[in-house]
Amino acid sequence: MRLPRTPVDTTHHPEIVDRPAWERSVADLLVREKAHTREGDAIAAARRRLPMTEVPGTATVEGPAGPVPFVEVFEGRSLLLAYFHMWHDGHDWAGQCEGCTFSTAQIQRPEYLNARDVTLAILSEGTYEDSAPYAEFLGYRLPWYSARGSEELLMRRGFGFLACYLRRGDRVFETWWTTDRGTEVMDWSYGLLDRTAYGRQEAWEDSPRGWPVHDDEHQWRVAGRPTVQWGVTDEPVAGESQGHGHR
Image (tube, rainbow, N blue to C red; front, side, top):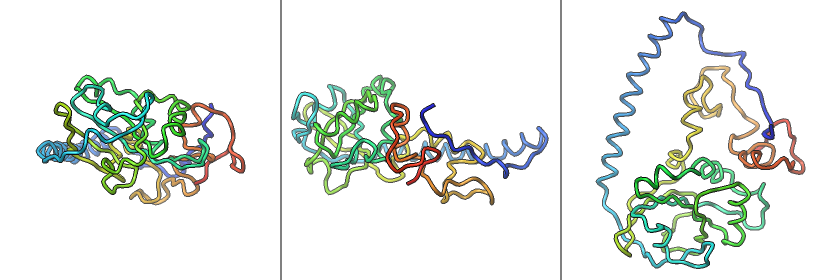
């Protein structure tokens, strides 16, 4: 296994009860979980009723065939989800953005979106020449472009956001966007961790006293690399312990 492992300290753990008591507690929580789901449905319904604003489909991005108009990123489909990926010029793979890598590594099978006429693409802050090999190194499947200098698409936003677009012929409209924790919609691992007894094991969480917290590392970066890179390389990072990661 390439990924350095840090075992969780299970000294502190949930209360141990018999099966009927456990089932009652789970059933009580399920009431809140269902309410949360219904509220999410209501928010999604409101999102579908948002207005939209036109963006230039002629805005230039760069892909494997060179500069192309933004409308070509749709690949002929009607809808586009685009993640705008940060890039650190002059840094090696280990020094690239761990947060953007965390999110984009988890969305590499777009077939279910394609089946609903949606293209999912990554637009990098770096030049195509510099950043496309990073996607290849990680084994990414999604189309990768450079949006460096595309202020018509950025609209004063920094990279690290997710945006949705609708195409009508050659006209392109932005329908929704989000950043920061809003991009967790891409991060299935967080949803699963939230179902475990110890959650994400991060200091900000409201957890019982004694629950394990990784003060010396972040899930996004382990032993000097964005975590997912340990799935494709064994190469250590100079100055980093291989027993556990550091931010």
